[in-house]
Structure formats: structure tokens, C-alpha cells
Image (spheres, rainbow, N blue to C red):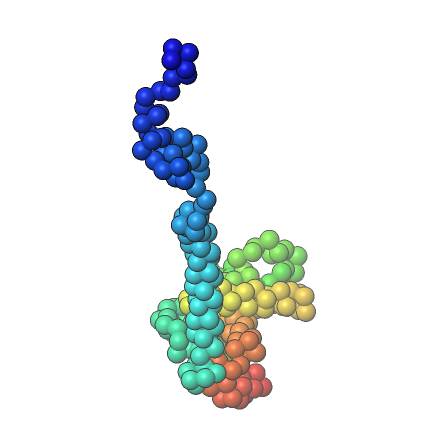
Length: 249
């Protein structure tokens, strides 16, 4: 009839094509836009980045621990393999010991032969300028700081220079081979300075100080310190103790 409600053709056809118990696909726009629940695959990217960062931190920690362990094994190798610490490090050539010994011998022999005096060396080149002293009568030499080092190149007798040369080569050769030139030279000259300080305090009014004995004594002290610190890694520690006692006595 003209007053009967009219049903849209497309909707009616769609509804008729479906069963009464089946949901209409045309009436499910909300279902098409509805968000699906997140499954395990949706969380995988964040978990992967989280696990990657954790693995990187763990790997870095393992690498650091391995490096520390290798370093410890390197320095403590003598405890398990009987390899001495000196054998684990490349030996240096004894340039400082050779220069020091040859310089003292050459200066002393040259001026003993040419001048005939037993007190010879650098003092023969610069008379009155190289021996360590603080004053001579009323002459003040305290500001002449080079004397604190130059006195080591002058010796007073054949026995004096022979004993110093023997002591230098026995004590300083192994130290320079292990510790290097600069460290050995620095400790040696610090010993020379220490000898001058001792002379200035104990015998301030003496006529002068000559010889490199103080530097050689510093090499003996360096051996003692090396034995105390590296006792278990020293290859000939008992022989070193015996030799040090003989030289010091």
C-alpha cells in the first residue's frame, strides 16, 4: 500500500541472503574497526631490543672480566709455570750503564795519565768547579747547584773508581735491562743527589765529595725494593739476597 514503510533494496537483499541465525556482514562496521588483542608477536620488537641491550652489557662485562683474568695470569705466571717476571718482558739494552761507566773511566784515565794526579775526572777539566762542597773558607758555593750532580764524574784513586765501576755493572745492568734507560738513570741520579744531601748535612765543612758511589747505592736499594715487591716472581731471589748482603757489607 502507499502508506506501508519501504525497505531499502540493498539492505533487504542482503538480509534475505543470510540466515536468521547468521550475523549480517553489512551490519558489522564496528567489528571491522575493532582493535585485535595483542599477541606475543606484537611485543616481540620491544623484547628483542631489550634483550639485545642486556646481552651487550653482559658481553662487555664478560670481556672486561676476561681481560682482567688474562692480565692477572700474565703477571702471576711465575707462580704456576716457574717463569720469572724478567722473562716475560723484553729486555732493554744497557745504554745508560755503558755511558756512565765509560764516561767515568775515560775521564779518570785521561787525566791520570796526562797530569799524574790520582784525583781526576771532570774536576780536571773544570778545576774547582765540579766537586760537591758548600764552602771553602769564606767562599760560598751553596748556589752552585750543578755540583750536586757533576761530582759523580770525578774519582780520587784507582781503588775508588774500580769499586764503583764493578758495583755499577753488577747492580745496574739487570735493572736497566728490566726497567729501561730513563727510569734507571733517574733513580741513579736521585741517589747522587741524596749523597750530596747527606754530605751537606753530616759533613758540611768537608773539602769536597767525589765519586758515583751514592748512585750505585741507589741501585742496591732499587734491588731491595724489587725483591720485596716481586719476591715470588724473581728468578734468582735467594742468590740476589746473598749478593746484596755481600755488596752492602
